[in-house]
Length: 453
Image: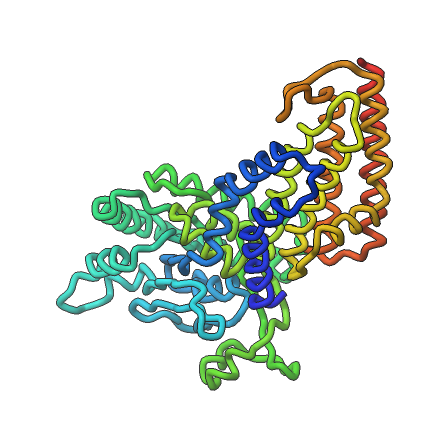
């Protein structure tokens, strides 16, 4: 999915969120004011949801400080993270001279800021009036990164990492002294594709021996890092291997790319994608970023589809929890209507993430199309008639713990179905099939629960 489309969907979701209060006010009189008040408190008052909505507009590009020796593949890692060719890449010479700041762009918009240092091994070779080590530390502090990415070579077996660790510890100490917070470090063991058998480059074809060798390699690096006093957030083995081609399918030699016009470089396409665990690395980077505006910036830059799914999942969780408090004994028609109304509002918000402005009635029609609403209502009534076990819900006299569980499960299933259809764009017939499977599973569980009453 293109970034501009995903961003538009996120903005649609925020607009729907901002209109929610007026939507609640227009709900039929059958919905009690107390119910509307609960919805306002639970949805508009949800701290995490509010942060996510504010972050759609209020975010900044995350800043990453890459440090590692020449040949570890820092420039290739930048490309792998962004999924496009952004930095110089070469297997022959040191790509990054001195210190470069890459503004990873999407059109006119900056997605990421990356400070890419000279290889640590080159620091001691610089003969100028300014101490190389102090210069590096000052540059990092001025850049004020969110995360330090310590890049290591999976195929290197020497003691040079000890020098790297000591320098990085000095950087972290100076950073903390000035900023009063720790700079998180994520260690990246790059080029795992070169671990024997090196001929296997497709991650889907990695053999068990190759996977085991990668794990042993990571353990060795982690032991060395920790035993020498460097605190890290995590350590992730990755492959940044990507081959490139022109839009008309002509393979491009990476060594020649830097001679291309800028417009040609920007139009390069991925010919072979050998990336391994880049998504895991992105997860760890997102988790390590402490400033929310930077964390949200990473999500908006590289993880928009994941963010949409996260938002949809959070909405499903909120509405499922509210629905569990609607179950009463016995269930009158009005309360069934409340439950369906809750589910319809949930579907409206999820649909907004797909770029669709769904009306309240259209959302109810979607729920009805799943074929589970009537069955769910009958199931609630059956449970209500056969049990007197009461649970504390959101309203006085809330129904049995069993009916509350089924209400939660039914709403959850509808929410997952809406996510599949609107966000993941799964064909409706497959969505219905999955919903029916989930419904049957929930029915079996409810019958077992009834037998234990």
